[in-house]
Image 1 (cartoon, rainbow, N blue to C red):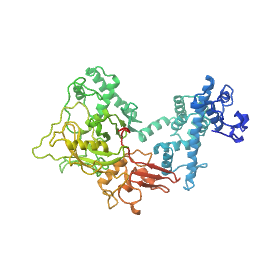
Image 2 (image 1 turned 120 degrees about the vertical axis):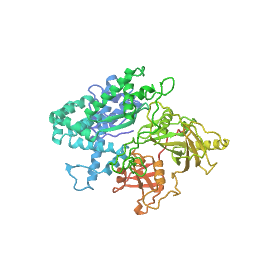
Image 3 (image 1 turned 90 degrees about the vertical axis):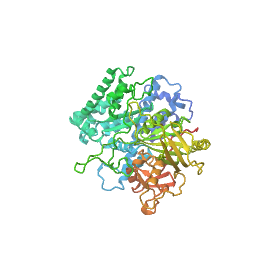
Image 4 (image 1 turned 180 degrees about the vertical axis):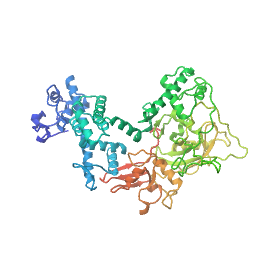
Length: 632
């Protein structure tokens, strides 16, 4: 890197020589850091310099290769560390500034928008989506970032200046923004003026405390407003994946009284588990977690104690007591329009007499979406799986979830064949096999540990190479060979067409048999075999597109394809086919974005969605790559 300094590059207006840059150039000798490090000593030029391009050059030069800072004293190291953080804040301020420029640029096409100075008071959803693509972040995050960019100039300019000067980190500036969000503009300005001078040098927690105190000082009702707003507009339950691979389920921004009552009930149930002495080695936190899950899943105290096992404990004679007979099925299905039924109709209520008022159906839990590798269930390999909203699943967890899923009569099963890179190339839905007269099958074990079943949509994945191996083994098996009680997959119709498709028998633990017709998924190329002649897709086409795309095809959106629109790339009204080669899953918001002026989506080949933004930038979303190992 060679950097030429000029008079305009020194923040104080001096020349390169006056600013301490040797010869007015950047680091021509990468290994010689000492002349630069001198500037970071006590009283040095760079130790207190505000962030700038010149400071960036000095930091790069003083840090040396791999930022090892050769020859630096401890004092110089800390000065370099502080200034790198200042540059980080400066870069964040620059990013926010460019976002404001995009708002101003869009305003040229949106006359009549209210303004604060030269900054419009709003921006369009398509612009938010364009920003989310450029920064590779969800649209919600992009919207929040743009709101902060607006606030740092118009509502909280002193905080914005501290960020740009390097005196405040981005996270702390965001804490100020969020803490004063519900105040009026005048009150926000008054609160900011109370604390601005005290913010530099404070920790994140100290900044948050100062902000809360300032907000209450200028508006004593602000704390109540913020809490009520959160309970009304931000209360939510989220499920995430922990770094350990375990799951997290949390309620956020919940009403305080109800939450305290719920917590008390969880603690009381955990206390009963403790007093029972049934789980003598369990930690109290583990007992509280068990109580939390049991109460949500409808497992009673007696059922848990009878099982002798806690959630997450492998059942068996060595670590479990007696087992409890649970009902065969889950609670009645939930529904309502747009629910789990394929056509969006609510389940039939049934059971009410003509003279009685209709009985509303009970609400069932939403079906979980699980991607589980067949090779792991068949004992052929150790392959990872995936849960939508949960993330990667280790093979042992895949087997446990599969067992819980097939224990529910609400669970549906599909099989997806993938190429070596994980892209879907074949698919079939599992259907019950009608039992022939006089045929018998193994009786399922009706004794279950006190654990809930897991109603799910399970997509069993397998690579085409592995499927071919299983098909060859099936052909060599003697006729009438008994099926295993565990998972198995056998070919019904001989070698069949190329690519490992055809008809297969899927056997579940306990001996239940299902039939699977595997057909190609329109990825890479399309033979239009499932094309609909009208605007609406048939059920098979819709399902295959959902399997291929898995999520909304907007590159930064993660909404499941089942919860997204079936959308034509080339509109149907303009001659676009209702076919997989012209269709993709789009969430409702992304669908609207695609229809906004300046946006365009094409499919260069089936499954690859090319988005072009109003700025002329292009982003491609490829088909879902199901979990496979590169070495398989």
